Image (spheres, rainbow, N blue to C red):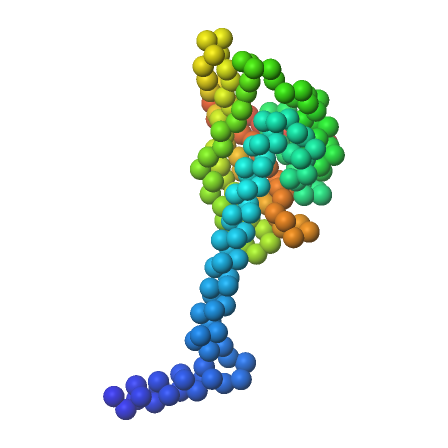
Length: 178
């Protein structure tokens, strides 16, 4: 009993020593870190949503702005690095004119698994590409997943690297262009 009381006083003295955080300060810092992590995850979630919205709207100016200065996109169209090159690739491969209805298309983005470590993070998510059939009903044409590396750049989360993989039908990703 006596040794546990000494240990308790020793622990209290250690916590109150200069340069050592009090239990309350530790809890507040932990709370602040947890809140920051949640805020980062929410901003990254909105990055993913903005990606889908700008892609479906064929707003490739907005779309390309979601990538870091040295951000890279790799998928069925090939690889492009940097916002200007990504925009040029999307303009070339998809074009900027929205598809007329009833031939509209859109992406469904789901299953966001976001892992943040300071100013970098990783994201895994699923996507499905939906087209309108001749009977004016939706049909999933392709399905796949994204593997992302994200980075905080100029105070905002951006894609550092986004790899779009087709799972249905399976297609191997092309080798990066030089």
